[in-house]
Length: 307
Length: 253
Image 1 (tube, each protein chain N blue to C red):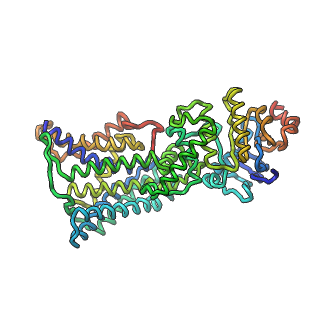
Image 2 (image 1 turned 45 degrees about the vertical axis):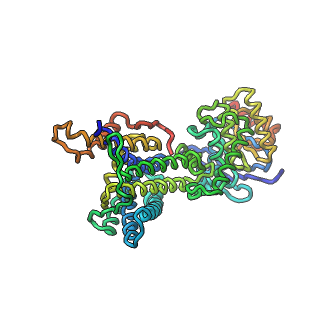
Image 3 (image 1 turned 180 degrees about the vertical axis):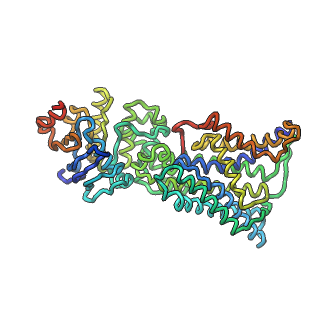
């Protein structure tokens, strides 16, 4: 029982991060029907930028927590700019092109960003300095750390803020209107290009936050880390119903928990033949299962409440 | 009264070999209710779509309030003061009635992405103003009690009213209604007529596409008739009604 609860907690932490990244995929898909495969790379850039900033500030004598906050702010700003530029350079010129074209560009941008990161930060694994004191708590036979609590709490607050933005503000309304009917929205004076740019900028800000969380959770980063993280977050978005915000949040958390439970029990289930390092297969089993049996995902509907 | 608000200059549009509009020229004066009628497929909706920037005309163009309208720029048409409703209602079905109207306010307000994210005081004040103006418009078209219902759950007549409220939210100089009475019973049509007269009374010019000839003849100051994409006549209802070509077009003569 303890291991079960413990894995649920671990899964919740990992799942919160997936959810933040999945939102970036789902917002862009909801508005323009594009899967931005370069989004995982935006997250990776967020992590690496924050490592550099935090490293410099701690080196200059700043307390770790404050340095982490500065690193987060810089990473968010850099990624927002990156997301905006991606849309401008790689996708806007292809507006109206067949759907496959921007998908290929997305993969191209992903390769470009990975290589750029490799040139700037090198091929080696980088260590992420600990940002929060290593305090751990014990509750009902489970252990969790301050970092884990912070990840879940900040993710939940951020997602709540996003829902407010989408459902309570003028910008959110413009985004939902464009997702439902771009032609009519434009007749209301909504500039589709602005709305699309906003989806990229907001998605990238969430991605940067997720990137800092991943970095401070695993305390390690690498220029290729965005690939697997991106694929899993994409899986989470598909699981929840791509294009649906609540779906991405739930899909992310569910995927995290499925992975954690899978990793926790796979050894027992296979009599030790497969170990917990096989945890990655669960995300893809889920992806294949969803695509086979319920391609619209948990909350998906044909012309659903996309945003 | 005689100032021209919208001037169509030899507007042409074809779809493959089909000539949907054949050099249609007409002018709508400020403050009038102008009717555009014609048999099915005469090109009325195509004319609307060219004017509001959803289609790019193959020839000719539009002058609005003294300056040309750019083709292929629907958000510019809205900014210049042209709003429309659709023959097949096109609301944002998964948004509430109030939100649909609030979206219409978009073109008249300013606050941008960063304002929305940072929740500046100016943004909050603007959003409050949008909300209260949208509520006024729902009262104006008499569906205020449905404000929080999803648009797709409204009755057909209420959806038509909501579309008009959403169009009015853009503060148009010219309101274009595409068959607003379609599918309405006599009572609803009577209410619609009052609503349109009220809108004109508030200073908005109205362009009305309609099948209901009785409604058009009773309501409009001037009427244009399209047939096979060409303008047959543009005149006051009394003259149009007696025109032999119009009678033939409608009776298939």
